[in-house]
Length: 103
Image 1 (tube, one colour):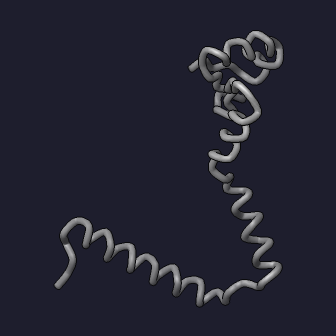
Image 2 (cartoon, helix red, strand yellow):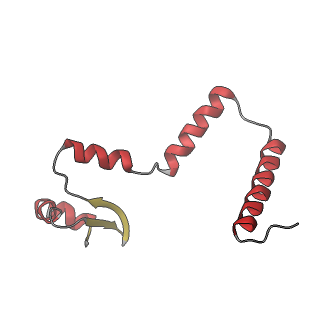
């Protein structure tokens, strides 16, 4: 995979666009990955990539905030009780998967 800074991509966009036909181009800003330039054959390819992309944490928070605004949330104590229950259940499932279920 080729790697280039956002500034270099901007300065030589057409060159990197062509290069993306052979392999994805990782775009960095301040040395950290921020995007990938990836060639597609048609609109269907582009849509498939977009649909298969995992949701961003920000969009998950936005949806959760909207749901809380619309339907209300749960009390603080109830939230933490549910977290504790889920952790206990997950711990039991993990021990069972590892053959360590208490008898």
